[in-house]
Structures are given as structure tokens and as C-alpha cells.
Image 1 (cartoon, rainbow, N blue to C red):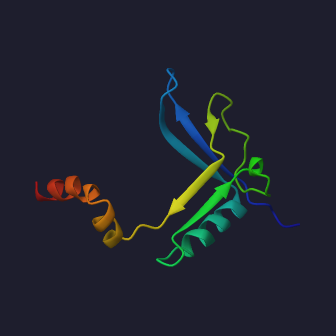
Image 2 (cartoon, rainbow, N blue to C red):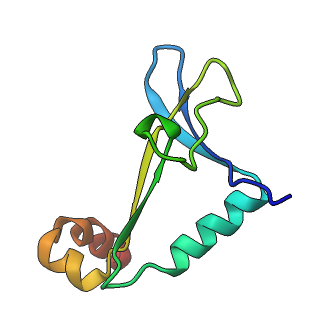
Length: 103
């Protein structure tokens, strides 16, 4: 029997509810799927989505948190961003990095 990919995107929240981080939990089939999707990214295929079953498809994202006090994501969009695109459309991303590199 082939294992179904299981990927859980769980957000870490502080006591006041502020999200301060995220954890990605994957079973072996989830690792294989994520690697396959990441390897497919290119300038002509610049993003992919991981969705939960609530999107009325056979989604890859689990809606069951590992920690019942945390929240899971039901949609993850992964985007391929070459520097040349970001320098043109989001130049502010490089201003801080370049000034830090000079110091």
C-alpha cells in the first residue's frame, strides 16, 4: 500500500495569540511530494499550492495539529523568486541586505 502524503503546516502562537513561527511536519510521502514540487519550480512554473481537504480536493495539508493549542494552515503557496524579478518589482528586499553586507 502506498503511503499518502501528509504535510502539516502548524503555526506557533505566543500566549497572547501572536504568531511567531511555523513548523512543517512531513511523513516520508510528504517529503517526497515537497521535494518533487520544489524541484519543478522555474521561471515558467513559478509557484505551487498545498491545500487542505477543505478546498474540496484531495489535499496534501492535514488539518489536525500536532499541538492542540496551535493552529494549522489550510493553504500554502510556494513561490519561485529569481533575484532579477525581485530587484525589478520589490527592490526594497535588497536595500537592507546590501547595506548589511557593506558593514
